Length: 370
Ligand SMILES: [Ca+2]
Ligand SMILES: [Ca+2]
Image 1 (cartoon, protein in one colour):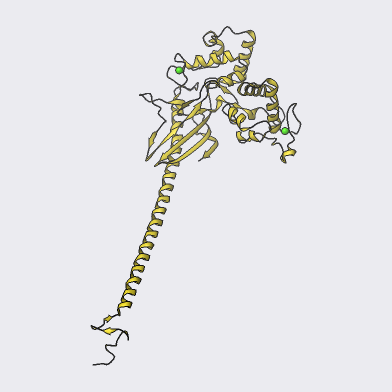
Image 2: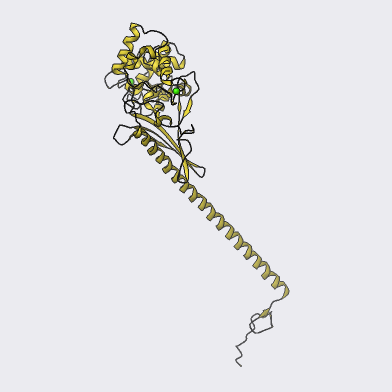
């Protein structure tokens, strides 16, 4: 037998069987403790890897849900544009049209909780009829031409005095200002956007005290009003529902709130008459019995039915005639749309202002994702 064939493995150990070593008592305990530690470390490692994998899976799930929610919100936009394209009344746009507030047979809104894929979307806005009435939630697009476009007040070379007078009337009505206070605010707005550095009577074109200068260009966002002296958040919030910077300027008398109709130069009674007429017998906007004004000339031809507060004076007739010629319409090309979608509690929202003309693809004026 080779003397090297079965060497003792440990000098202090005792050979018991071929290849095995019996350790002393103390050493055997140490090996057990080491083994337990190794097992503990392996378990902790497995737990930490498991946690990390599950965390990453959750993140991945969130991103998948978020991306699905975005595309569902986007589909919501396409769905409501289809409603506009299907609109049977091409000659007029009103609050009872299906793009504004479509109701299902059971009376519930079509565009609330609209199921699509693994989620749902909702298209909604607040309809303001007048400052004395609580706004109402409608499910559809909002007519941007129910608002005054304040970017039209100033051109590169001049101020449109008729449009600035409308803004003064609106400010005075909505903020309960007297004429002087309203003119001061509007003059400051005009100086901010007009192209020169000449101060209006009550305006402010020099902002060097704030180390800035007036923009001297049209607004790109309505929120820029907050840069102008005199406009604070409270004033902005009260006015912003009536104002826009999009569109070509004409006001749709089927969708405009009372304060806008009055700002155009109509008396408050006559503005209310128009709203009562278009709301129909149930005195509620965006319902089946609404009576949309189908042509601006109805303000003349149907004046007895529309202006129930009393016969029109020669001055009223002249105002209405002027509005019909240049300022009002019963159709709209510009719309505001808010589409929010939810997939597994993950939300995505798109807000947009879009120009929709017959037989043309929609063109975006504004787009915001959140
Ligand atoms: Ca200026
Ligand atoms: Ca109605």
